[in-house]
Image (cartoon, rainbow, N blue to C red; front, side, top):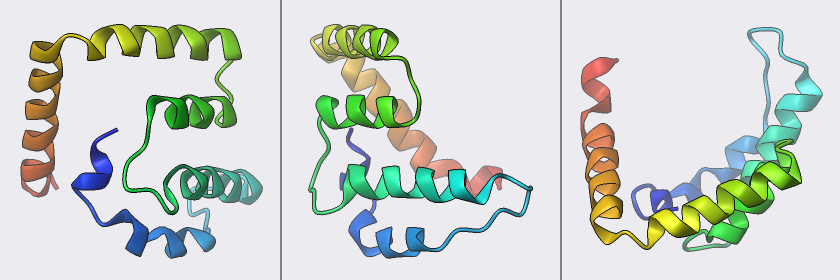
Length: 101
């Protein structure tokens, strides 16, 4: 939920209006996925767990499973030390992703 602070995503959402399918994916599904991402991020400075829950449902996650994921995430977010570790790993991945390309 912190990804928006790391990348100016608002500047790039317009590019999701274009879709291509180089691997033969169903173009309608690619467009649908792109729209889900636009709906998740457009006009927001940050996303909430509720935003992400709605995204999971839009992507086809069963409502019961989505609620379980949401509940577990709420539980994990209360563990400040764990959240810090996850953030550190995330920042390391962002910082070093070019090294693996």
